Length: 287
Image (tube, rainbow, N blue to C red; front, side, top):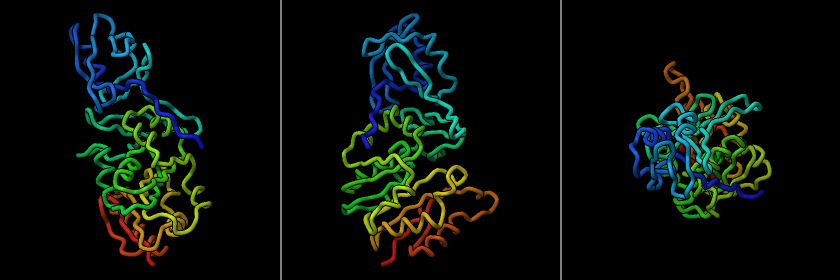
């Protein structure tokens, strides 16, 4: 399967769009890639002159977003909010930047795919991926999402990261997200556009040195919290290899111990030393 091609369009937040609309005529320095770099942009009476020479209408810009956290793709002289509804999944998807000049997340049917309280999405993934130390070998990243975990795992020293993603709507968001470009272009990262369960069925035993399992919430993807999946993860993990499983706290306010139940299931599937770490569970495959 071919690699997913990243868009190289300018992408701005609603905050930057508001600056364009409110700034006096003249030059402003803003980010056109959600905080990765800064650029000089010329604001004129009824349009914005971009570094590539495109003239963006202020009227069009004002009509394509509502909130400061919205993300807007600028292609040529046109712009659109990065948001769409999928009839097949009956869910809406949007790119959402909770903190200015920090990595955005994807919102699916109202649920954010990263932590956005007291930390930004990139910091969220960094806190979790650093639990998997590397001496090389391959790492399985079960859910690519926007590719932050895959990038961080490759940087951690794994020779190769295999990352699965079944939702083409999420991949469409990744393709336009500037913070995802490095993952889409990194030859150490193999993106497999399929359900991780289907991928595992054809995967050889004891292949991976580590597994990073950061699925959507149990309400969106309950099948990724099943005993059957844990058995497959144990099968493809090397003896002594490490699994990190994000859990979060669904039902926590009602006293539900979701992490405790997952620890028990992992133990039944041959994992040892399972313990709570970084809003999830860290475990090791027995010998």
